[in-house]
Length: 272
Image (cartoon, rainbow, N blue to C red):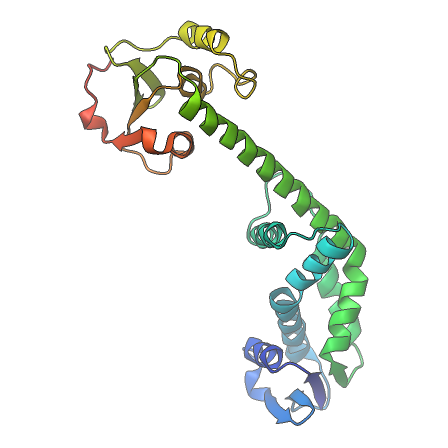
């Protein structure tokens, strides 16, 4: 018989439920000193061995990994603000679901799987708390590196948010004399004066010089958002039938109540 002892009932149930194809061979027992999940076999082998590895890995990812990361954030990187820590843990979850393209992350789950495989060999009894502690110790340096990547992503996100806040401050407080701009999404984004004539890049460059601001000084003139930030109109009307357009969503976020979204059919000027 192979037995795993748990001190936490929720973890014991999660493990038991994770044993899918071999579940009929396992039993769950509750004791005064904890909870056991037992395999009604002489030993852990074959499909049962594979299922146990998978279930342990799933349980550690669900119940332990974020707690380990939180410990690294607090005790290795000395973060104290709970909101910052929570946001970084959310980024860690995003990394788990979909790692950013081009970012080289240490293969923590590969290391965990390999450790669990070795740990279970020739054992008839496993104390889950001891196993999880040993797992953490085995991947601790990689977890520090992994958490460092999360911190880097958080800092980039934080810097970007500060930049967005500075853009928002500009368009809400910089008086350029421009009352209304129309923005048409017709395959490309084109800005129009309220008289119906399109805005040229030279006009945008002129406004950047006449109303200088460090927060827009280095933006590429061809970026579709730059013209709106340079002219900083009192009102911006966006004409688009597309949802989920990142630049248009960013403009709505920056201009807030100064921006409105209308269907392309309501564009008041002749196109083309």
